[in-house]
Image 1: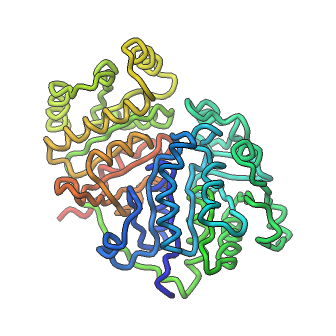
Image 2: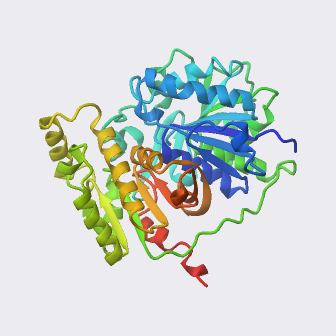
Image 3: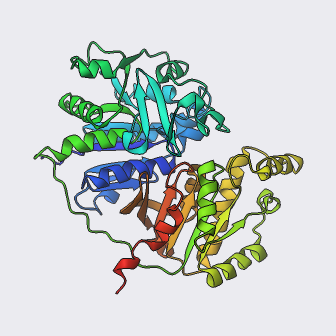
Length: 445
């Protein structure tokens, strides 16, 4: 195999980026995730890298903000010229014309990756995400729901999904044609002709064989210039299966292992119902949970007395969770919104909370010896990693699909080689926090 990178990806939020990195790691592909596009000098510090990701925040931005963030990423990826450039989005297709527009991301990409179709794969059966004849479905607590009827996504506070046909939803965000390659097309083995397909082509997938079909089709269509792909981490799973059976692609034994720990901090800015269940499970398994007072969050001041109390809690309780709310129906969500409005908190309330949680987390970490941190919520994860000076990470251990434990690389000595798990509110399973705490304990000497 030549030294050309197999794939570069940009994740439209931090937790989704770790999801893609984990998928590649599972196939023995050394993958580094960076917070900004890395230059050659930085990449030269790491050996045997096959895939590179950049964690972003475009899902929370308007098109103008997306342009500012995506332009340097696309420019860097164009220069790297991997086989594939992947715009990685959430497997529930969170987006609208004004917030996290996937269509705008595809339009901007045409300035750098001009030729051919843009294959779109949102399904990820391994994560309980399925697409059939363009309609998308997601599993929740053992039941599979059409996206516009999903208990969480249909009520998303920023981008509620009222349309399950992804081609229709995407067409509201771009003037590019959006075509479909259905499960029926796969069953008929309809030829995959890039020149004859629409500008963006949505692929169905209900099971593993559909993923394998997609992976082989796009791999066999590779060429001298990078192919631009859009989709969930299903893209990584599909290509990983293809590369697994390809003798020309090296799979490595990646030897990173977690250390045993005795203290752990969890910081949650998520209001998903999955997070609510994770909090309840954590409480029943010895975690101390502490709701963050929204009155303190509203202020720009550092609440040192409050945070010093949390530090004492960590020393006594060992396993502590700081959280903002227990699900979308928690009355504190509306109370927080009302309090922020009354006290003239300007801008996005979500961003303000994320920034505060990031600052508070750094204060706590600076005054403790904690070596493992969990952050729940995509936006919160971005603010925390920024505060800790983390510029890159790679997977140590897969804890739950889409939510791995990672080794952090930071310019700040305190946080270099910190073990950190970043997860979206919807992933991880109910026992996630306990599993992260236990990682590495069976290797204690």
